[in-house]
Length: 137
Image (tube, rainbow, N blue to C red; front, side, top):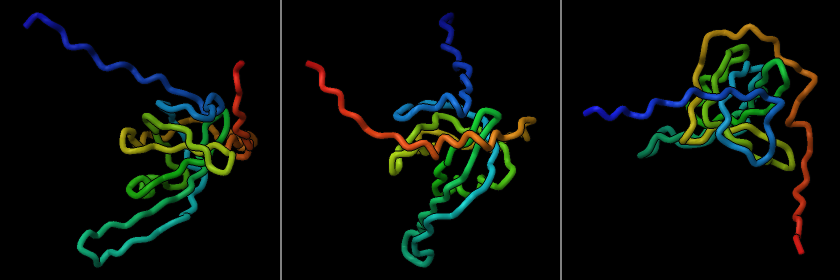
């Protein structure tokens, strides 16, 4: 067994101001600025005690802020002031603006507090994008 197993790649951390519409596979370390529950439904007494929870959390780093859509178990981790590492995050478009999300292939982890202050005057979720179809002739 002289073959060596290929090692895991080191994650390349992205800053919030580098996020663009339609991109995915981002790894970021962000601070939670605030959290707002937008949907909570489900029957805790049914055969499957499934509950669907969605919260919109304003997260950011020293370059800017963006809205992160937390789903189900992710909602519990998104405490105000917490430092979070988002792995394999993607950009979803919602009503023409960017939202950061982590699906089942990604990971949301609480990490040790970061020593940066969130740049609150650069909110990328406030920028409205328009889908333009380009026809090549």
